[in-house]
Length: 283
Length: 283
Image 1 (cartoon, one colour):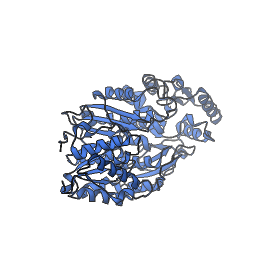
Image 2: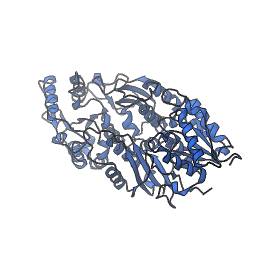
Image 3: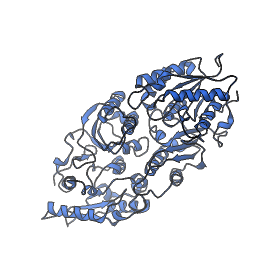
Image 4: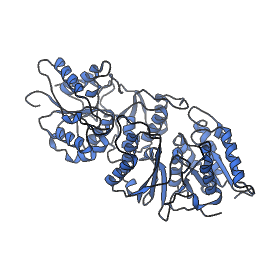
């Protein structure tokens, strides 16, 4: 830890944020830790704009590498999902040095591509959980507080309640589907795999769960837990099955144990899921 | 060929059709071939309904197997895409006998999952092309006529113009993305791979092209040709790159030659792309 306090570097591999998000998150951190607030270093790249993205591929990749390789930073907190991590990960990964391996990484949704790649490359402290960009949600401070308590304190109360001794991983369904069959697909043998979704039609959720569970390596997971699938868009005609029915179906077809629900999703209740066997230690 | 004339069996592995579609297609076939019309056998399963699908998984699978294994049928024409081939293919494939191997298969879009599986299982006469359900499109008779001329006559004028000596294959982008890393992913080594899309946002097209071109086996294709990407839905914010720009980008990143455009897509101009080295013989 840097002498100034626990230092969190914040970058945007995918979509950008407005500066007022950073102001609100820093104010929250000061309220939570009035005596020794963590240092939140929002990289200026978070505010860049290039079409869909928080800056060009080159700008986003450079910012991620800079923050990850900075030895004065303790944790990398990805600021927002959206779309774009996949466009830079193959530039980022080979540029990460020893200081990058020594950090905590936190994010989810599109950021799952970063988490998968880091975990696959042997990074030991990677976790799926809330992002800074969520503070404008109704009661969004709850999600951001959870992220800070996880990063700053290593608070086990922030973890998804089923997280135990078995290795774990969590992904957005579409993001994991797009990692299947690529060199970035992580080895999830014996892991409890938690999956969540937002803003997709039921036929797409069904199709992606078929895809994921059809992959021979995924069939070696210890089991699947289904997180929340929120804001499901209209299906024409009505799909006729809900997300848990299709998750159970594909688990049965593929021989993967269906383990029940997971307390994750695109909402303020989204709990933290550390990858692998890593469990944070109370600081 | 059956004694009554060239016989086409028509089934619905995914979405259903209304019976008036079948009437219109049969009337068109009689106008095209007044002296010896092909026999179009629309399986009654085409009109079934079960939620999203043309009947339950069991009903759809049984109809496909029945038509494919019927020795009096010369060609299987999949009636419509939509979604659902993936839900039945693993029941269908092991049930196909020798008579099934002796047929032509035609369809596209969601049906790409059937084509991939059949081609991967060594079926020699599989093709990507128009479906009967397209007759209600404006000038849809052109697309249906092309399909009939391909099936009934083996007319080379129906083929996508770049189809030559090199093996070929064609897919909807999302469908191929969902086959990557599954046992159904076909070996496309040295193939010219043609890709088309409909009704997707640019970020999804970009993401799926990244996914497809990241797969090591796909990197062995001879090259990619981009078909039409129609009815692209809104991207927030504006994506800033069009489909050809992203296709060129991912070809460059992956080392796959970008070969230009392909005359395929979800429209009446959709040309036929036979899988592999098979080229139809004029009958």
